Length: 253
Image 1 (cartoon, one colour):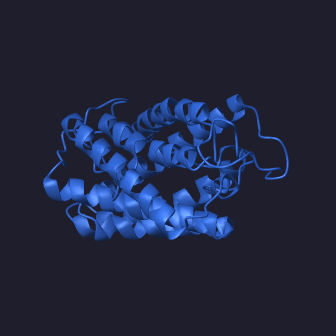
Image 2: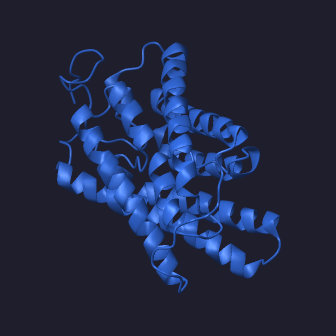
C-alpha cells in the first residue's frame, strides 16, 4: 500500500467508520458480557473488558489499517495531520466518521445483549484524577504510535497499541479512554463501559491536551520526523508530504 496511490477518500472513510464501530462494540460489548459473567466482582470485570479490548483492537487495526491507517481516534488523525502524514482536510473528514462509528458500535453492542438500543449512561467519571489520567493515557498512546512509525516498526503497531491499551485499563484511574470518539460513543450505553454526557467534555479536552503534549514530545525526541514517517501511522497508508501539510516538501513515493 505504501508504494501505490492512496485509496479513494470514500473508501478510507468507510474503513474508519467500520473500524470505529467495531472498536466501540468490542469495548462496550465486552463490558456488558463481563458484568453478566462476573457479577459483583469489579476487578474481574475490568480484567475481562481489558483483555477483550486489547485483543480486539489488535485485530481491528489489522483489518482496516491498510486502507485508512486505522486511526479510529480524532487525536491520532489530528497529530498525524500535524506531522504531514495525511491532509488536514482528510483528518477533518475522518473525525465525524469516527464519532458516528463509535455511536453505531455502542448501539450494536446494546442490541447484541438485548439492551435498549440507546441508553444514556449515568456513570460520572470526570474527577481531576480521571482527567489527569486521560492526559497521560492519550500521551502514552500517541508516543507508542508515532515512535514506532518514526523508527520504521509500524508492523508491530497493532500488537503494541493493543498491549498499551490493555495495560492502561489498569494503570490509569480513568481506564484509558484516550479517544474523543469512543468517549462520545460510550455515552449511549448505560453499562459497565459507559460515561455520563456531563463527563465527556472534560475527557475530550484532556485527550486533546494529551495529543498536543505528545506532538511536542515526539518532535523533541525525533526532530527529523518526516511526512513519510507519519504515513506509517497507525499502519502504513500511502499519503505523505501533501502541499497542505506543514512539514517539508512532497515525498516521492
